[in-house]
Length: 137
Image 1 (cartoon, rainbow, N blue to C red):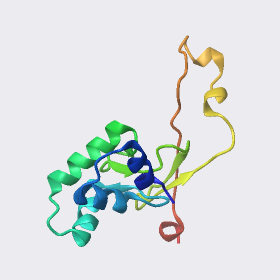
Image 2 (image 1 turned 135 degrees about the horizontal axis):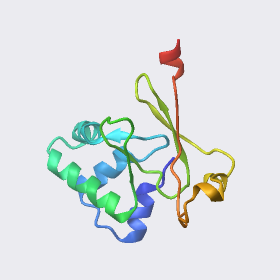
Image 3 (image 1 turned 180 degrees about the vertical axis):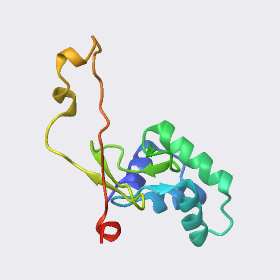
Image 4 (image 1 turned 45 degrees about the horizontal axis):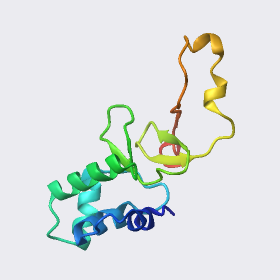
């Protein structure tokens, strides 16, 4: 389970009813919702919430570093609340489902020095792709 709400409270981020609902919708493990999915789920809880409020709140959460924006294969951006635990993503090439994974090893160390072209590495993003059980079956 993500600790998004707790992190936001600790930061002193003003939790209006709209912001709280967006954070509640995003809270959880393996959550990778599009902005439209966040809006639909938030509207189920708070019918008066606007799409603009959801987009603005997501933008603020990304700027704060509390939510990660995930893009895969030109599909709609998704929002991942698991921003403070290093992880990679496993993406279904059929339906687009995304799961957080924690592979063993260090992708920064795996890039040989002769392929770094003098760069000082600061991060790596690895995306694993395949078919989920529902799409493979």
